[in-house]
Amino acid sequence: MPTNMRRMTIIIPDEVEEQLDILKKEFYYAVSRSEMVRDLIGIGIQEKLCELDTGQNDQTQTAAIPRDISPIGMEIQ
Image (cartoon, rainbow, N blue to C red; front, side, top):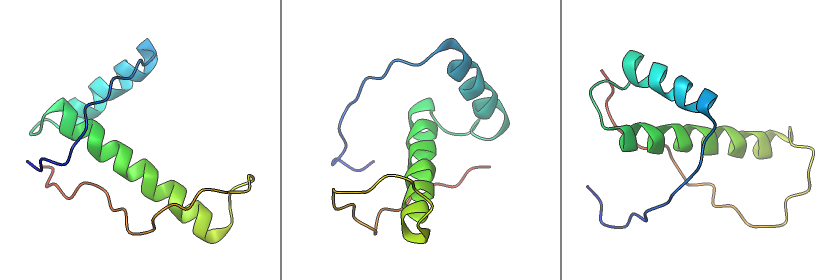
């Protein structure tokens, strides 16, 4: 596991926890919950970066966002 990780704490609604439980059972049963959340965050980041690249966002972006971010490269069985 890479050592360049930071610990974060988030608060999620019950509905999101239920959705995460479904994803864990259906797609991420072979990995830890932390790995699942990192992967889902990576997927979301990539999706938003694609929106920026295609001009689908409605807000003006002022911060420079690196374009070389990629989702966690893990195998999910």
